[in-house]
Length: 479
Image (cartoon, rainbow, N blue to C red; front, side, top):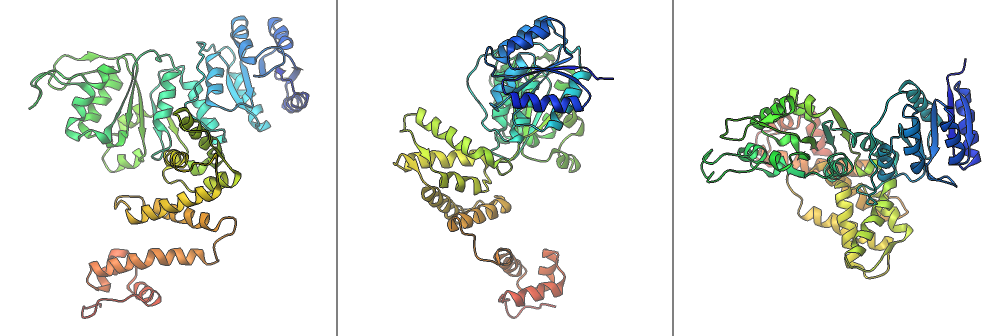
């Protein structure tokens, strides 16, 4: 017994054949067409249990056809395919009522699984709200970013609370703005506040406002961020830095939809969508007693993890060209990268993620007068950054990030040729030598205390001292 009828519209006959064979083997009846008119004829005639359509068809856009399909057959799931893998494509598909968006190229197993979900979800009607905005707030076509686009496309049509996690510089606020700008609250305020930037004793007043005389210096009533964001979206960045007292107040808002200003007595009803973001592990903060577990589950109704740039290196050329266009729009001459430059950019580890890449591209665009930015120019800038970071490294900076940056500059310096063999041992020695020297100096040469500090066996420490030919302070007891 066949599972149902699948309608496919794509102007590429090879794609129609492959999809038809794959779905037939999965137990479905399949009808294929190369035009929007052919698909519409079947839909209008009541045929099909799931429709799959490409965006670009010879007679009509799949996006233009979608609203008609949803009006005529609101229970018919429609899957949209597109080779234009941008966030706008995913959002446009969601806004026009598509069941899901499938970026090309795709795995046939993913297609079959998606059709199965569509079949089981028949009857679901999604709200549509046509949206025409040509801006692309997020750039990238990698599989990791496609998952983000699809999630954004689904979430724009809801008010679910979202927590965005990711390293610094991955674009968490851009995603939050996309959820707002393409969502149902787009005509209301978007208010962003970083918990790390607000003094801890002022967080509650910052968020919920205060009454006159609530504390020393409160000469007038203060409006909080919740009041500013009423009806819209409140983006709470670095939520892991929120103090415990403010966490309790925020939990009340999420549970009961109301808050009380500092010094106030009357609860205030609020209608605000909360989007939180963090570059820290909230579960670890919970174990340390620094973050409320009940608040975590209220905030992370839908968790989104943004991949670091090193996990989406194929997006780097698109991002680099995007930042060049931004600089050009600000009045600088148009520039381009040569192939060597793009390859060097892809090889760098980017501990600062997209923000670091943007900073470098802007610097290259300003400092290099030629029309083409070469691999040599990129390599020079990367090495200069390595030297600068080595001279002025922040004591609180990430050791792994500094090591990554050092290695990236090392590889960039060798161009196509790899560094000499023995890299692993050389890097270990570069780290071990200053580590042991500093620990021995801190313990005034006492190897027992230094071994305890390092978490090493005393004999192991002695061997390392010999192997590295370290000079131990004389005259101090070592046993």
